[in-house]
Length: 88
Image (cartoon, rainbow, N blue to C red):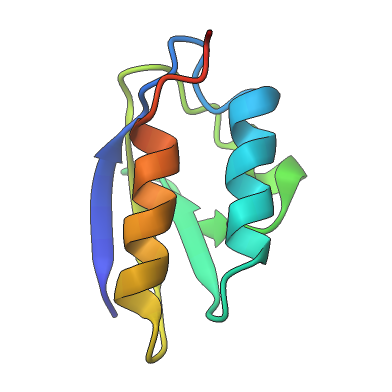
């Protein structure tokens, strides 16, 4: 299963607006995607409550994983959203 390790780019972390953008993009993917932090079970990337529950802060590293024929493309797109600074 392909994975991407990504550092959260927003100083507020995956909270409110960045999390909403990420979840919306994850829901639009043709393959299931999960997100997690080291030491914690991965969660469904399409669930806003689960993503917010990760408590991922700016500078934290998260692990994205996906499965299926378009997994690499989905991970590329979602990794870019996580790495971007959405504070502005």
